[in-house]
Length: 187
Image 1 (tube, rainbow, N blue to C red):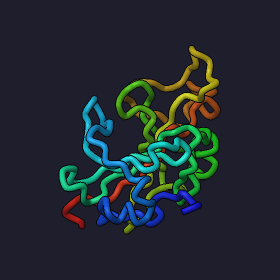
Image 2: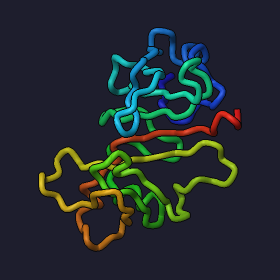
Image 3: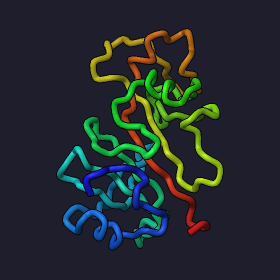
């Protein structure tokens, strides 16, 4: 697989064996302690654990039996993975807004859901009706951002065109991409 696109061949009914067929057995590592929100840990799979450019975390609806793909997360800065809608790691908030064609909304930084894009405001990157896969992006501070950068923080929702943060468009970048699949009842 030379093209690392999410969701690609990934689907909610895949399990460990299908992942091994897609990516090679040596590239599918069962991990008992994948990180979750608020310090939780989950049993899941790491794809390409030894290669940060291809590493991804795979979570399941049933974490005991590792069945029912739930979410696939990529958060390595130089990841080769991208979303099928054009989003990729390192894109600036300004680039996202341009791709979307409209301002977008996101949660402020510095908490468990910090930086998550919460609303594409009906733009080009908004979920399409009937699409069972949700494409997600999380913003973070650029590596070269000044320590005291003025960017939205806290559990409030902010807009990409918020005049209180004139530099956020270049200071905030995609730091995580994910795709999430329908719940177990939909399998």
